[in-house]
Every structure is written in C-alpha cells, then in structure tokens.
Amino acid sequence: MTLETKYKNYYLRRSGLKGIYGDILLQNIFKHKPRNFLEIGVYTGVTAINVCRLLQFINKKDFSYVGIDLFEDFLKNNLIDEVAPLSNYSKIYFNNPIKNFFIRFMGRELNSYESVNKFLNKFNENIKLYKGKSSEVLKKIDLKNINYIFLDGGHSFETVYSDLNIIYSKASKSTVIFCDDYNLKNSGVQKAIDTFVNNKKLSFEIIEKRFVEIII
Image (cartoon, rainbow, N blue to C red):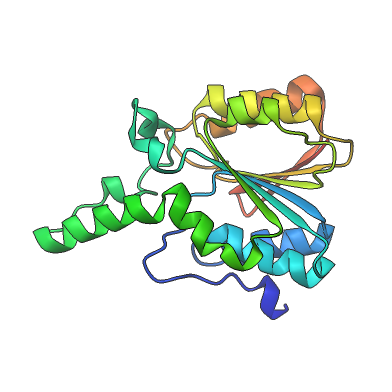
C-alpha cells in the first residue's frame, strides 16, 4: 500500500467512506489506473481530493477529474430523500444547541459548490465540477474518455437505475463503474444495480459486501 492509496480524512469535512472503505476504493482505482475519472456524489470533496492525489501519482499532470453533485441544493425540493441515511449534517443532532447549530451550519457550508471548489483548488487545472441532478448533467457531458466512474449519488432506485443506463449508453467499452452502498438498507441501490446488470447481461463483483464493480 502506498501513501496515495491510504484514504485521508479531513477535520469537519465528512465523508461517507469510513474505516477501510476509503482505502478499498483507492486500491481499486490504483488497480485499474484510469486517467479520466468521474465521481457522482461529491459531497464535501474528501473523496475527490483523495482521488485527485492518486490520479496525479499515477498520471503526473495528465489526468482529469469530473464531479457531479447537488451540493447545497440537496436540502431543497425534498431532495434530501436521495441522500444516504445519516450521511449528512442535516440529520445529526446534539444535546448541546451551540454544537448542534455549528455542525449543521458547517455541514451546509462545506457541502456548497464554492467550498468544494476551493477545497480542490490545488488541482484546479484538472477538475471540473457540475452542480445539478446527475440524470440531467450526465446527458450533457461527454463520457467517451472517462475510464472510471465512482457512483455514489442519489440512492433511490429511479436515480441509480437512470444513472447506470445513461452511463452505459454514453461511456466507452471497458469503463469501470464502482458503485457504493450496495448493502445499504432502505435504499434502492441494490435493486437498481441488480436490475441493470441483469438487463444488460453484465458480470459484476461485490466487494466487502458494500461495493459493486461493473465493467461495461
């Protein structure tokens, strides 16, 4: 394991990848050595900065990172239902009202487009962030040169299934799709993935009961 395949956490910037799971993602990326990476579900940018660090190690300056997220808009129009349970600040409560206010406020701020863009400033020549629903953004951007996709956006069946099908129709053959939260209860992730791979007759691998690797 190299330093670049060790997932680094950042104070206050929450990430859905805890314990060994961040390392597993980075080690899988290192195995495939992509040049052009897409992440759906950027959140506060912690995974993004870890991925960019690894892509730079693999490719020097010749890499690209594309991120899609609702950013601060996830609190609007009931879109919070798309977020993985307990993975965001809006669902965290503390007995101390001052701490409660601070954490919830900072969560919204650190999840904003502006904050994430600033957090990734070191790699600003290599990154492109899109704010919006993945189902809409994916239809507008070119996926032909993307080698690796980390899918961790909306968790409803409709969103995951739509994202997978759009990716399949636009991405090049041999693109790796690495899906998170396959084992997450009360979400549509597992059903969407199972339906997609069965309909497209694709092989897949379940990793640590949580991730699914699909190569289209």
